[in-house]
Image 1 (tube, helix red, strand yellow):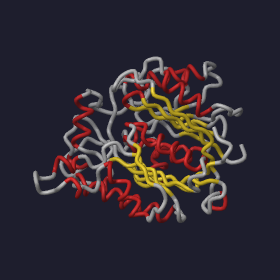
Image 2 (image 1 turned 45 degrees about the horizontal axis):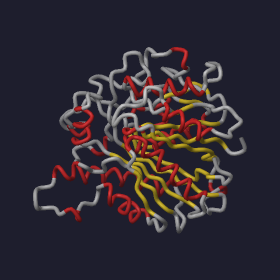
Image 3 (image 1 turned 135 degrees about the horizontal axis):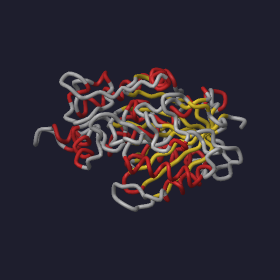
Amino acid sequence: MSETAVHVAGFCAVTALGDMDDTWEGLQAGRSALRQPGAGRNGGFRCKGPVGAVQELNELRGEKRMKQLLRLLHYQITHALHLAPGTGLVLATTKGAVDELLLRQQGSLAIPELKMQPWNLARYIADQEGITGPVSTVSAACASGTVALVQAALRIVSGEVRAMLVVGVDILSEFVIAGFGSLQALSGSACRPFDRLRDGLALGEGAAAMLLAGEDSPVGNGHGGKILLKGWGMACDAVHITAPARDARGLVAALKMATSGVSAPVGAINAHGTGTVFNDAMEMRAFETLWPDCNRRPPFHSIKGAIGHCLGAAGVIEACISIKSLEAGVIPPTAGLREPAAPAMNVSGEQALALKAPSIVSCNSGFGGINAAILMETCGL
């Protein structure tokens, strides 16, 4: 928690459902953009199950796919955000355009010429957006986006900068699809977060940007900062390289830090909700631990059954969706969920659920036991 207010001064996203408005509309309607890959559609990736592909990226691979996605995001940023001089950047990504390494011909492309890799992608985005403040990269597995938001907030609270742009971006790639396939983590049919018959995740791609600002920033209160980033927490349980802690100790610790000192109830939770057996069970264990009284337990949902798991972009996309929930007073349905694994857990299924209070937690968990959570609320709560 912090005594210095961190405002959300703007946000935008591109997902398999479309731009920010299209994505929110699709989620409210319970639509899913997950489709089986095929030649000429969804990039033709070799995958046994559905993927959440951004349609404008069809037929593109590696660097070209990433550049086009960033062009789409750049268009959204220029229309939705005001980046003042001195604004910094935190980039969240897991693998960048990793297929760029697979596709390049031996000896024809030197390492320094690679532009879309995690080690130089942040500088590329900073140059594209005219960022003049501090620039850094977070690659903390599937929790990257939320960790990046926390790091940006900390820089504002410390007084280092007045505003920070957080960008989360990842694309579908043969490398990542093969990796999750080798772990037998991919569903062959559909992503079913928190469903009794869930059998794996579906990979997606997307990009999102969120502008955070302090109270004295020229993009703060006077420019639509009606949402506060009120609390945050990070924890690493380090139980296993890929599996979550069965007792949810890491996520519990992160959620406790994010919600400590908050007297008002948490209105809802935007969960990680991958649709894998162990992740979903771990999250429900964490929610039961923190809110043992089912009548006081916040409702929760997942968006990964609609757009897939967007890896490093997931946390930023889900934070944007959380803001839309705060504005609408509801969390959208959980696409893919038909038979809740735990009916008493108050998870949204085919219907939206009302927030219990004007605040929402967004949390993510990643390989290596990395867990992160943020708490957002409307101003004046």
